[in-house]
Image (cartoon, rainbow, N blue to C red; front, side, top):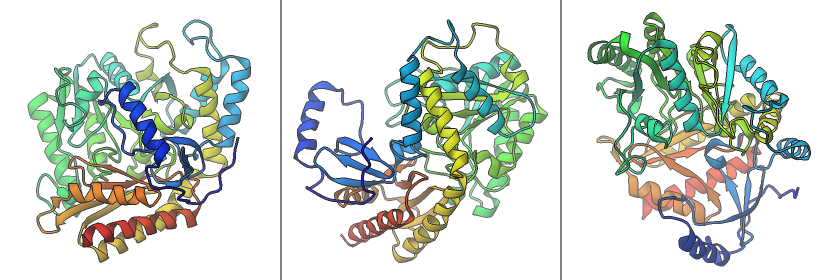
Amino acid sequence: MEAIAQERRLATEIPGPRSRAMLERRRAAVPNGLGSSTPIFVEAASGAILRDVDGNQLIDLGAGIAVLNVGNSSVAVTDAIRQQLDRFTHTCMQVTQYEPYVELAERLNALVPGDAPKRTLFVSTGAEAVENAVKISRYHTGRDAVVVFDHAFHGRTLLAMTMTAKAMPYKSGLGPFAPEVYRMPMSYPYRCPTGEAPEECGPRCAAEAIHLMDKQIGADRIACIVIEPIQGEGGFVVPGTGFVPALASFAAANGIVFVADEIQSGLGRTGAVFAIEHEGVVPDLVVTAKSLAGGLPLAAVTGRADVMESVHAGGLGGTFAGNPLACAAGLAVLDQLQREDLPGKARALEGILLPRLRELAGRTALVGDVRGRGAMCAIELVTDRDTKEPAKAATGAVLEECLRQGVVVLKCGTYDNVIRLLPPLTIDAALLREGLDVLEKSLATVAGA
């Protein structure tokens, strides 16, 4: 595999002529419904650098939307895939079985919080894993109701799309939606739905959510509560202190399966193997995907054996679920996570990210809030700090300016006004600082425009 120098280089304007030509081909072959946040086409990548078809080398602060915690084209992962490729590519676990599936399940069972015996089911995508977590919860409890939260994102399939909060672009015109999904207020300290100060947002929102679940649904009808310990697409919302533990206690007291959606926040991203660990909560089920196989499609539901074993034989599965190439990659990812202490690296990156972002907030009124954990940090842009009016246009302009300067960053948030930073956990500190320099200059350019 080619080793790409870990440095930013601009060979042409961005997008360059070859990327623009590829865009024309794309328009003639691919539907507009598949959005892309940048107009560039990549020909090679390694570490925290993307090289486009025009020879530009860009700093990657998006990591394929948190897929590449181990870095672009991790040597350990690609080597594991090649070795498995030489053996076989597929058999279907439901026909003839293979060891990588079992070994990876054993590894996840040991990593997921909690001392109780666990089981792991593999599927192909995060949305598929979310739907299986709900399916298992409903079977285990004999109940139908599913509780989710404002600003949540859980996927694009029918049930996962229903569970997702944001209408545009994820749901608008794509209904009707699945029944028995109920949405509760989310603790969002910067925009607390109850109007409380940030330090009181957690307890107050938990009390309100529990009241609504009890009175509007009935605790005895709820199969599961599904929550992202740190919301991803919803704006990197870190819930207020006490919010998640109160919900978990309510679930335990009422026989409700408590599901942590760790698709974006898991596997070292927040400075712990799983973000739920920051809350001191042991979930019944944990859903992982994205970075689990270092770029190959693989997702998992891991949880208490008594819950996971509920479903009858044949009730779970999928043709490509737990593909052997993806399982081999997953084993290499977990090896790298532990060998290189990727949660520790995420904590070190937090020590660079959050202070720098707070400095930015002190220099530009565009930044209304700074938040995050580990290497999952964000700034929320507003036109006015008093009214907190979302600065959607400015957010887009900042991202465009960053891209012109050779840095890929992503937006998120219900109001499209959050700039999220998701560097590979393997990124060199100097390269991250250079990316932040570009972000700072881009913010200044837009703020002064």
